[in-house]
Length: 316
Image (cartoon, rainbow, N blue to C red; front, side, top):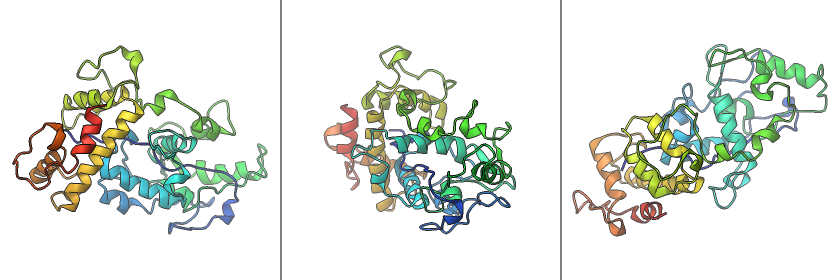
């Protein structure tokens, strides 16, 4: 089975109700944004690198899965000073306002913006261990909040895509002061994990027209992903575009189980390890038992370690 990253629902969000000068480092040893410097470069680059991620070139969140996703969740929690239950429902596959906001933050800010000096931005750059940090008491067009935002979050930063960076990057045009309410609102396409529209068609017939986006189960998603070349993220994205959130959650659980089992056994260094023994371990951990897939070799001690998790996906 191919080792594709599939997103659960992210644990993190932004709030705005406390003064910037009152913000403290909390759970993260990071500086705060000032008009002179803007938000500091992330202090979590090493943690991300240990999970095989480059803070300066983050992939789409839909392409992060398994132990990489677990590591990202840990950085979210530390950066915001929140626990999983502060953002997620008991069923992690159910989107919440905070998980929707976190997806937008990842795509538009962590991936979309960079300091003028080239320093990578991440959740801790702005939050520094606290979920809320803005004082809206003077939100007039020429008030203290607007001046602070311009000096701290517009002038010191640039967009990675080369487009002009100004208030509209987040607030849109026309200007929407409460844009976080919009970001946290229900979005069927985003909740289904829909990637950009230029990813093409999936490599296999998923049994329905394009209108069935977000409706495909985990078994069909597996078949689709197995039809993609190992490094073809566009193909994988096209498959995931058609999958339901529940399907992707089941697949992510199965992937995380196999990754963790093989890392614990010392046969994989990380979720991105592509060595022969790591791939053999991953395949055998995902086989055996009621899956009906034979392990090779049959006496591999890791055989069937995650068979129940993979069977739950394959039968949905």
